Image (cartoon, rainbow, N blue to C red):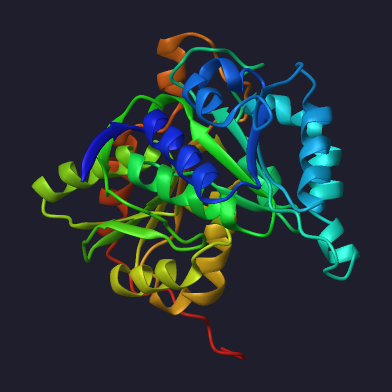
Length: 331
């Protein structure tokens, strides 16, 4: 076991996969400058800086993937993905299906997102749900160093395009990472804390927010399950449903906006498949429907905080009404 930062874990995953598989290459905005160790190890043919041209970068990656390579591209900040939507969504996401499986698109698109670096609205916008909605794409957004390494390795090995988001505030967060070939399968959530009273569901840096809230709740006699989704698509429905079957209550927390966010999909899933288990309404705590601010103080007000999670969980666990069950037809 080693203790390294998220950024170092990402670097390890890239280096190990490039050593393991000569078809893996990385290019994008500043990658050869930021990752000089990779450039020295693998050379300019596999580690390349590119112009600031996101559509061309993503389109080149899609073409490279179709010819048998495994490109990893870094588009820096998530809002820049707007310039590459056609290449990612209409080409990489759809052409494997449209070709009847004749082509594969094993490519990873990396981007930074989330508050914490005060980079303002043009560089900070949580767009993960856009790509969850697009057929053919997978979406990953980890919360800790071990999962960053393990999920990136799995994403590089996958035969489909994967959007891999790094919450900026986590980049230099240290954590324990297993030695060796540490791979975390896509589509498997992690129960990072166990409790019987309420389920807190999150991903990226708001997982830490939920863990902080869970510790406060425990001091008040309320024990929370905390679930880290890790992969937003495919979504681990089984883990979510099993937890809510135990607790009967759910609070969903993420920084992205509320409208049509990942939390809305999770809430719909629980309403459709776990309704009889619910003892109280599902609660969503999210960012507001405004562009992210550049002030650090305003950023913190923008992001759901632990105190709000505690308040929501206490409100649900004090709910004295009967279980919510469907009304019989004709009643």
